[in-house]
Length: 457
Image 1 (tube, rainbow, N blue to C red):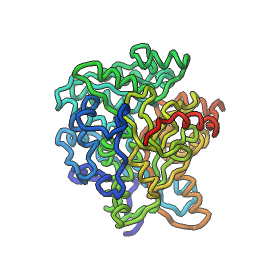
Image 2 (cartoon, one colour):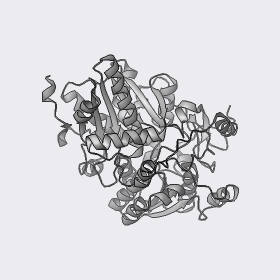
Image 3 (tube, rainbow, N blue to C red):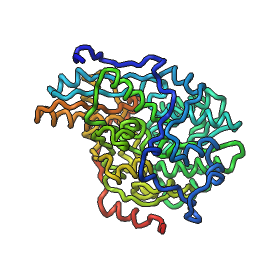
Image 4 (cartoon, rainbow, N blue to C red):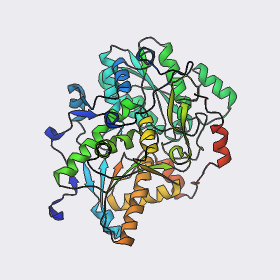
């Protein structure tokens, strides 16, 4: 098809929206290792997980065989408020870079939450409401997940308790206020409201917090309050399942114009965006139908893929959650306070960890000043102020496009633009004022946390 017929923005019709979520585990030869009970080190049973998570979400979490899950009509109706999201041809960026590469990005920031997180938040709130629960608890790092969940809970009339990583709580007051506008309570973590929070503060006075800390507090509150369950915005199998709508739409839009990507790039923290974006493409790789170069991009200050170890670890700092086999830095790892944005979780999705370990994808880490250089460049050229998380993918997409300029190769690059950065202006300010630092943990730092990993036979 002639290139001039490809529009700047490729939209699917409402009738072309995915009606099923895709479970990539069904096509994996080597399945992700099971979650383990932290006390017995035996695989977690459904009844054990149901004390923490919603019943139907537990079934999704444990299901390694069902390839397609029908999306409930109520969720589809909500999706229609902001989906399908556009697949954008970055013509201006291509021209500015002078590259023969063709660059596309899937933009997930066109909803009030400002990110892709709403895709799973509305699903998890739906299942909580269907179960007859009073409310849910959760953690949030940069704030996108907390914002999305507060919106979803408001829609279904559920109470929402959010524990927000302390450094983000202080740096992003407006993100916090959006959550409160939608009815959520927001508590800086670690806090004095929970036993685990008080313990962490006693052991680490003045800590700026981590997602691992916030998870522990949210789980404690959920377990101790009847009618509540805990929900998570990334890492878990169920979340990647819901986020597959991103990749399914992306592939459908590309197929509509006969476009075949060579490189697919996504930022990686816990894995929800990356796992969602690559899902159908990874499925093709697993089934031997096609091949793509898939790149996970993580921050150099929290490099679980590139410098972590593949081992069983606690999902939270308080060590009350199940053990997951994943690429991890250690559950006690806390990113430097100057780390901007999200992507601050100590581990990576068990699904993505298994795929990475099996060689189906690659990973790279980038420093945050280089990330913000790419973010500013993209904003000036493409007209969208990107979230710091998304800008990790932008950085590597630009780098790959410049390699094409050097070699003359006309590769097609697709990356995920997970959301907007309008609540991240403190980080942008630090970058513009020259106050942003590129903190990279030393080998000695990481060895200290690695030594504390649980011993699992």
